[in-house]
Image 1 (tube, each protein chain N blue to C red):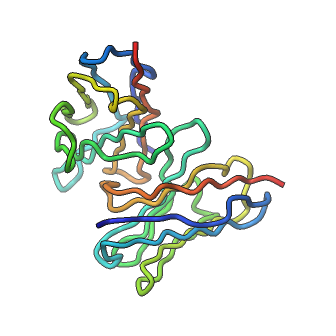
Image 2: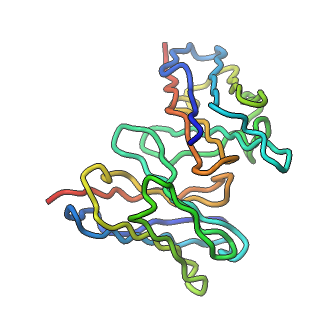
Image 3: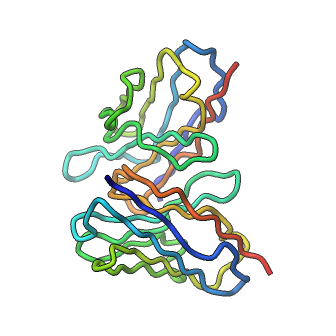
Length: 114
Length: 112
């Protein structure tokens, strides 16, 4: 069955770099896009960016200068790297599949604090 | 960016009742391929969002027929009939016609 699972550090210091991994199963990254979505505590959802089945990427313009999404198809993993983190980047980060966002991971809480 | 205006913010409902949630976009969501990429999600407390309706009116696998979506262009509606306790949570619309993808701000469905 289709599954996605996010992993990464729960706490990141301001100005540092966030690295998250989304490990997927039940589908191929070469046939499906994977997106990152984040949700600050008690707030709504924000699309962060995507990596498409062919390997190209798209990013939210508000985050583009700090963001990089890549993948390792042999390990069925998608990576998110965001630098120069600020407290406003504190959020639950989800990975989800396809433009439909039909399946989601359980999310990983990232707190930016010293 | 396409602004998605979702109303109401909060929606009290009696179990067994019927409600509607509105989502309006700042520009047409009709893609050049002719499809309209407007979707609806429910986020239950402490959980990830789950897909309910895709491309305006198509129910995702396992979604009961109490949920229905309609609309076109810039004006869309999610209707829930015979509300059950499992329907409570926050509903979001999402447009994936234009980049960046944008969500509505959410509608919280709660017991009256």
